Amino acid sequence: MAGPDRKDFLAQARQLIGADHLLSGEGLDGYEKDWRKRYAGRALAVARPGTTAEVAALLRLCAAHGVSLVPQGGNTGLVGGGVPDGSGQQLLLSLRRLRQIRQVDPANLTLTAEAGCLLAEVQAAASAAGLLFPLSLGAEGSCTLGGNLATNAGGTQVLRYGNARELCLGLEVVTPQGEVWQGLCGLRKDNTGYDLRDLFIGSEGTLGVITAATVKLYPAPQACMTALAACPTLDAAVALLNRARALAGATLTGFELISRFCLQLVRRHFPQIPQPLADDAAAPWAVLLELSDHEDEAHARQLLERILGEALEAGEALDAAVAQSMSQARQLWHLRESIPLAQSEEGLNIKHDIALPISAIPAFVADCGAALQAHCPGVRLVCFGHLGDGNLHFNVQAPEGQDPAHFLRAQEPAINALVYERVLQRAGSISAEHGIGQLKREQLAMTKDPVALALMRQIKKALDPQGLLNPGRLL
Image (cartoon, rainbow, N blue to C red):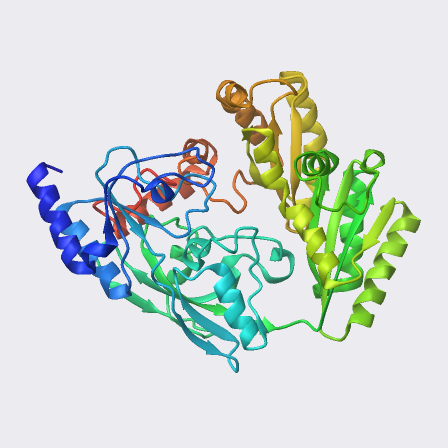
C-alpha cells in the first residue's frame, strides 16, 4: 500500500475506533511476537475495537483499501497463527477489548460472552451461577474465548465434555466484507440448513472474525477426586484407561499421560513442585486421572479407590497417590501443567501435537522412539498429553549437551517427516488441538486428502475472495 493511501487508511481507522485504540510504532512486541517467540512480524498498526460494530467497520475499511488483517485473541497460540508477517502492511486486529459477558441463562444452561473474554472469566461467570464451563487449558488466565473457538481448543476435559466445538451452540461472526452474521443461538436442535457455526470454529481466523459465542454450561459436580498413578508400560496405561472408563463412565473427566522424562524435567527446573511418586526411576509412565461426581465425595473416592485397587492388582499400576484435598489436587494438576514450562527452560525443542487412535499409541511411541534414536542418537522424548482422547504432545529435545537452537534448525524437517509419516500410517492427525497456523501449513498441504484441500480452498475463495483474512495461515 502506497504512502498516501496508508495514511488515509490509518486516519479513517483512527476515526472509527478512536486514536487511543490504534497503536503503531515501538512497544508492540506483545502483539507482533508469538508466545513461543518463534514468529515475529511487523504490523501496519494494531487496532483494538471495543464493539462488534467497530470490528465490522474496520473490516469494511480493510476490504475497501485491500488491507489484509490478522485477528488475535490472547496471543497464546503455538503455531504462529495470530501474528502479522514482516511486511509492515497488515492490520493486526486485537479483540481483547470485547470483554462483556452478555448473558448467563441457567435454565437453558448457556452463557453468551464476547470473544475477548479470558477463558478464566467465562469459567468464573459460569461458576458464579453455580454452573460449570468445562473447557480447561493451562493458558486459561490469558487465552480468550474467541481464540479457543477459532482454533477449536481441546484441553484436559475433552474426554468428558469434548473440544471447544462441542461446547459451542452459536456464534456472532464478522465476515471479510464487514457484514455481521448473528448466529448466537442457544438451541441444541436447529436443522435449518448448513451449520455455519462449525465452518468458523477451527478456521483460525481465515474465514471470519468471531466476536461473540453462546456456549454450553453444565451442572457443577458435587465432588472431584484426583490421583497420580505410576504405570510400568504404555500398554498398562491404556489398560488402566479402559478400566477407568468401564467403571466410571462419564464420571471420568480427565486422563493425562506423563512420561518419566517429563517428571524429571519438572524436578530439574521446578524442584519446589511436590512429586508424590518420588521414585520415578522405577516407572517409565505416570497417569493423572480425575473423576467428577454428582453424588458426593465419598462415592467418588470409593470409585477411584476401586479403579486403582484393581489396577494395582492387575499390574496396570505400580503405585498411586490420591489427593486428599482440593489443594493436593491442584498440586497434581500443577505438576502436569508445568511440563511445557520445564521443557521451555530446558531449551528449544521440536514440537508435535498429534492425535492417534488410543489403541495405536503404545506401538507408535515404541516405533517412533526407536526411529528417532536411530536417526539422532541421544534425543530425548518429552511425551505427555491427553491419553483419554488420543492426543499426545510428542516433543523431541536435543541430546544432552547439544545446543537446542542449532538442533531445532538442523533437525526439524527430518524429524517432522519421520514423526508424521508414522502418525499417518496409523490413521492419525498431525494437529490435534493446536491448529495449523504457519507452523504446519506445508505439512498440511502434503498430508491432507487432496479432495479435502480443494474443498477448503473453495470455501476460502467463496467467503474471502480478496484473500484479506489471515493470509498465509492454514492454507
